[in-house]
Image (cartoon, rainbow, N blue to C red; front, side, top):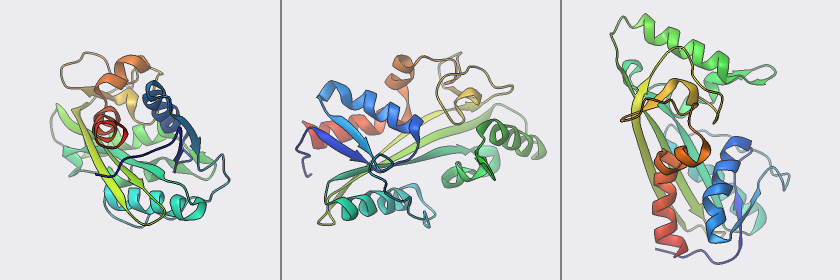
Length: 202
């Protein structure tokens, strides 16, 4: 397992919500975050059909473009009633002509769940795959899964993406109702980061 050295990490993402979560998770290690957007890097086409495939595309593109180690995150929500959809296409379901609209995406997702005719609880998982890539082509991969169910109507204004309709197992609150400190102790991203930190940063 290759170790990361340095006090600044390039994060291959243009998603501000993800960047804030990652920065918070890395702050106790004394590592500052710079994003692909900060460096003006383009977003590569995510042409794979798996989280790890798309995470590798983003991490290696950023590492090759800058000569720096780069961390990427590919994540999304998979709903059992929809046979795992939206999965890797989670962000795509939010795309509009004027940018991403997750309020619209959550409504569309819920309507698709109802159309299945299945009864709740509607089991779901938030999945996160992290890839830390170096300019020489080496990478390390870590995954985290948070199990729960989707609920309606949306609850809470915290977090980002589908957080307001996802209630983790064992909790009465949705991720949208949790503060960042609480969410960051149980989330799929926190699980993946725990593995990343223990293997590459300590």
